[in-house]
Image 1 (cartoon, rainbow, N blue to C red):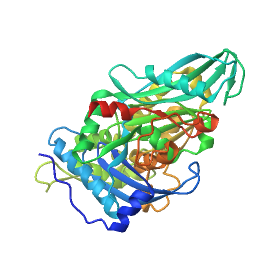
Image 2: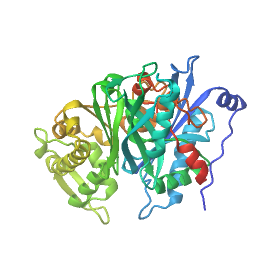
Image 3: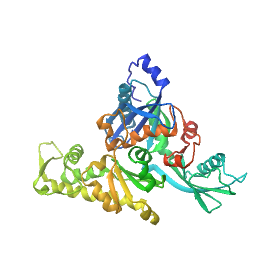
Image 4: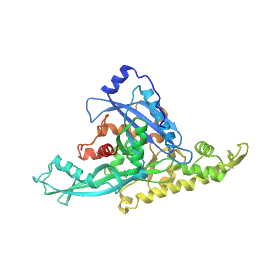
Length: 435
């Protein structure tokens, strides 16, 4: 049976505020946590809105169905996170922006050629080409999430940042279509429905993380965003201000924890705690003389004393594998090796000491650790790399204009729109057809 939602009394003034002001709620359901951010936007110009985080909720527990974990457990974890954010914000939310893990996202680069009716490109021509591309951008057995423009050309010769007003006969548009496995989207929508929530918009998790941690110059010059989660590592690649690749690999921080537990015979909860407190992806001076007591599986009375150097020697190979797998997926394009020169790592796994250095070695380029930017009103813990996705969901709400409604139309697809990662989003119709 579904777990009942906790009831709280919302003051009348708060309910009015929820209706009158623009509120965006973002939900990130990871393998090890559920998080919810609620943001309030204010301002007269819809292109320049000021955001303030007014509610943060977090539930740290396994959120992936498996041994000992049921759908009811997942529902309870999500409800606790959302309820905590609602109590802090003093509002009740029903529509949320939710992240789709990179491991279920499929990216397809497609091209659309459109005959220019009057010989001069109009905004309607651009919208028509984007809509035509969105119809064929989804991978088989996948639900369409977004289709974003990468580049435009006219008569197969010149590239234009904004082709509106230019003369020609054929407008060619290159797009990146992002879709998600339909069964996974079904399960995600079902979980939200059990909690009394509706998916207002579904955003690929690495795109949401990029919205919160990357600066516009990084996107313009070329950057790889790596989000190290518990069960998977997501990535997004930007070139010339546009996202050109997105996905994930099925390996993350939980695999490091499992390695530690198996090798040193410790319970998983203790392995995670020791990894967080003492773990590193590099061996420092004197680490071979610093010892850590590992509780052993069983009655808990027995311990195993291990040096910090031995602990790091378990972590380093797995961290190298994480970045090598991501780099292998990303660097399949030889041209990308020359055009991208920077890596930004985020997510809970990025906090391990030495992770940045391993990323630089794997990608042969400069790296930094990314934290959510411009989070006014958020508690200090909410600005940690582990909350990059949730922060990006509410920050991206202002860019898509989705305040309590689906954003299904095509916005300004000029160069400015590409820089802002504006998407032609289409999950609303699909979800309405399914539920």
